[in-house]
Length: 100
Image (cartoon, rainbow, N blue to C red):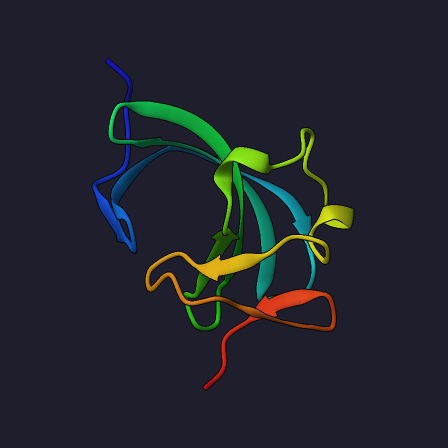
């Protein structure tokens, strides 16, 4: 049996994280992570951007068309959404953000 996190609610239901690996640090509060997860019965790895100061997490809006390998250079050209609300992100200085 795979060890996972507790269920994490997101806009499409809930997911469980198997492993998260830091790929790139943009600042002292913003990190690009490669996240292995299970959603329903499907296991996949997706990039996520995590802001430690607010706890906000963004993921690509389309999980089926993520380039492999995904790098920090791919961030500005990706459409991002807030993982918890599903709200589209705006891009500011090449990183996803939410409107206040």
